[in-house]
Amino acid sequence: MRLLLIEDDASLAGGIRTALKPEGYTVDWLADGQQALYGLENEIFDLVLLDLGLPGLDGLSLLKKIRASGKDLPVLILTARDAVEDRITGLDAGADDYLIKPFDITELKARVRALLRRSAGRAQTGIQLGALDVNPQTQQVFFRQQAVTLTRREFALLHELINHPGHVFTRDHLQQLLYGWDDDVESNALEVHVHHLRKKICPGLIKTVRGVGYLLNKEAVA
Image (cartoon, rainbow, N blue to C red; front, side, top):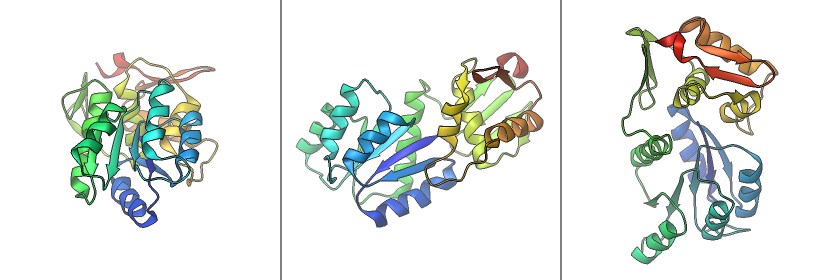
């Protein structure tokens, strides 16, 4: 899962990124609202963490532009503005949730998980598909009741595929979700992750659609 953190406080942004990375998220960071708008127009993200007091373009205006463009990805506002009117304004502008600074990082993690579940149309924490069980909260994976150990990016790739079984994802889409702007990416990195998942879980787990990308093969885990 790839998140975009839009926050002009570098210290806070660094703390949030450090806390979320072990959870399996790729977290990109921008401090300017106008730059963030450009990034959202040209890159793929699963969720936005949005401060309201931003240079370039304030957070509320950015949020309205996100929704006006038709993007329906979850947006979690992070702000020190704690008045009821501010929360109502943010939610009415299209935010999915609102967290007041200072906040406990464990609550932030829980809200992110909840928003991602809701976005994927799930109420439960775990995802089960045939003999394959995936828990996004603990990053545990079981296949035919046997534990499978995955790296952070292997888990992120599996999580994206199992959220949409049978859907064909382009190579570019998956690579954008796995790697942020600060990451060095080898040309065959995605293929290596696909190979490892097939080896660790089952050979037919991920199907290659030539010229397009990859999909999770539901029949392989039945």
